[in-house]
Image (cartoon, rainbow, N blue to C red; front, side, top):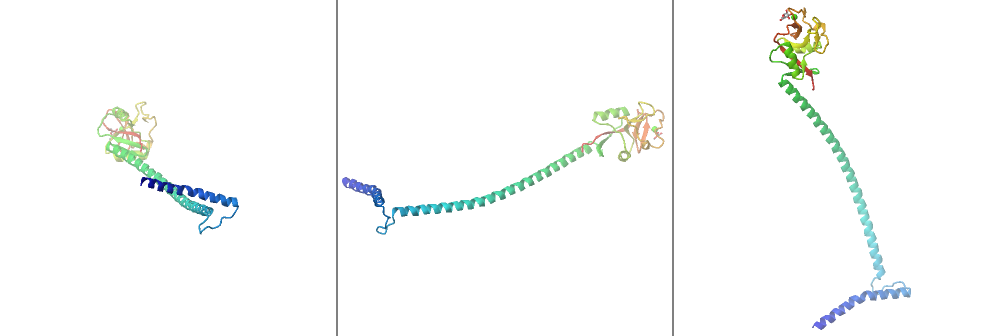
Length: 237
Ligand code: MMA
Ligand code: CA
């Protein structure tokens, strides 16, 4: 049995091994004879198969190329569309961020305003004013304002005077005196008060009055009197 198996195997191997060499021989014979390859027993000649194979390959390659070009242009259009969408989203993002920044600024400004009002500061124009709850002498009030990072108020305009007069119900010290030269009234920054700001008949230096207070308008009063006081500083909001 074993011998037969080997014989069969050798026979099969021989068949497969000899087929290509038979074909080659046939092809060589045809080439040597210089003949066109005729049909034999209805079978296609080998180079006809090759021709068909090459044609199919070329057709497949062209089809593949067409499909690739199609997909490429489709994808390219898609990418351009996405690029446009990304740009639009980026623009929207900057717009939103600018809006957020604006809101943040407004919240900060409101916080400062609320804190200022809670701690007793009132804003008017470019200044904020602190209206005291207690009474002290003019000199103590001047120093107290400096301690608070401010200065005893210097009322420069009629509007400012009206604003302060409306905010108070009793006399408050302001940064005005003639302590330097009797009768020469100056704000703490060295400027002179406008004449229309004095209460009619003031300053009258009634019994030695060298320090300024505001009621509805300005008045001179004795510096040792106990008064509320108004500090001012530049507004940051
Ligand atoms: C009066 C008046 C002023 C003076 C004060 C002092 C109420 O106003 O005479 O000129 O400065 O009194 O308190
Ligand atoms: Ca007076």
